[in-house]
Image 1 (tube, helix red, strand yellow):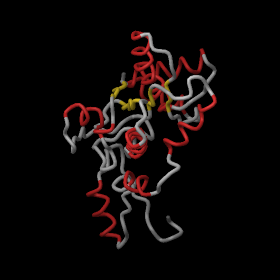
Image 2 (tube, rainbow, N blue to C red):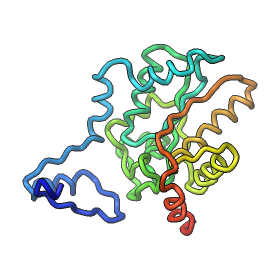
Image 3 (tube, rainbow, N blue to C red):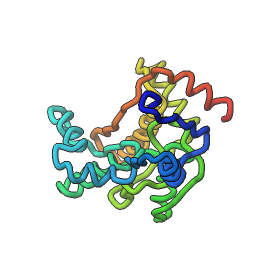
Amino acid sequence: MRRCGRPLVPSGRAPVGSRPCRALAERLGSHFLDHFADAGRAMAVCGEPTVADEIFAQPAGERPPVPEWIAPGTGTGATSASVGRHLRGHGRETRLAVVDPENSAYFPAWASGCDDYTTGMPSRTPGIGRPRTEPGFLPEVIDLMIPVPDAASVAALRWLRTAAGIDAGPSTGIHFWGTCHPVARMREAGVRGSVVTVIAADGVGGDGRLRRVLPAR
């Protein structure tokens, strides 16, 4: 950025919406590229294969080959929207559960039916959760949303590390905690099957992030 003659403007800890970003771009004679605004539409027009096709291709050789639930997180909302569209467009019986971190706007928006819900507070988990609902989020394709407290995600992450030997990042703790909910439903109903989640964070720097979260909890 600096080599191109443009300054780096730190945002601090406060959540940054599109309005101040647009104002900053206008003041600097630049452009604001809001990838949240069109993420869902971009994934919709790209056609197949989508992330949903890849999810169903991976367990095709297992038994059972079709998962009972798919449980992604949501950042832009595009992944859950793409998976939900696929499930409904192909008439699949697999259901969609979306996990949402503490302070994120997506769960209360889904529960209340308010499309422009805002919390005014950022998620402490990198990569998922937003202080406002983004245009790519489609609540109508979601069967279940699972809000995950920070303390629960930390506990899940530490269990993965100590019991399963999986060194993963903070968002993985949220995903794992979230998948336990449909698993518990299946066990209660006597249903055998699988639950698929999408993990995209490794454990690099994870301890430092956890230490920043824990003192406040």
